[in-house]
Length: 243
Image 1 (tube, rainbow, N blue to C red):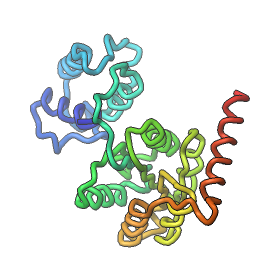
Image 2 (cartoon, rainbow, N blue to C red):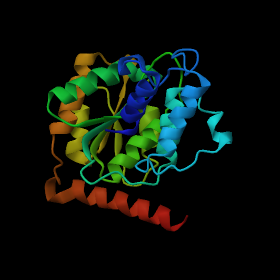
Image 3 (cartoon, one colour):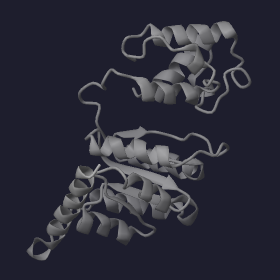
């Protein structure tokens, strides 16, 4: 169970409510009716659980945890205990507020195909968020080998691709038709698919994802696709050496 799912379950347990009532955007006091004692118990249980690797949370950090999602992001940024072996998934998926509905639909589609999916948010279209942090989160899972592929959804998919491609080892492609999604894999061995939610209907988005995940990379005639990928890798190495 990932951080978000564990925290949502923990909040529900502390407040003695159903897990379905707890969402990342839920405000502890305004939406969930939590008391100061409830928050104290929640923080104590997080601090006292060695599986988080958090230790004592400074009071200065607590003031920024007004919503459930604030706690999830804080733990993910601070935890020192590595995820257990076998925690890798087939697909890591995330969106900004523009792509929430499509992300949820694609996650259900992927799970119906029998694939394991890690959903990194967001859960609501009501509160605007900055997309780069979600692109980076998926990118790191992919390059670290904790996800075989990634799917990012934004307003156009272009910004998500730009951000994800800042991480060495990522080959993110923004596409709008299934054929391009297939070529992204076949020619460039792309490992993250970026989609624009307002530009695509759910059916076309599913076809893009299906084509992306089922198309193998082909080295090309005389290996020219593979040769070009190696040239890109050399570019990354040269950039890293200059840092």
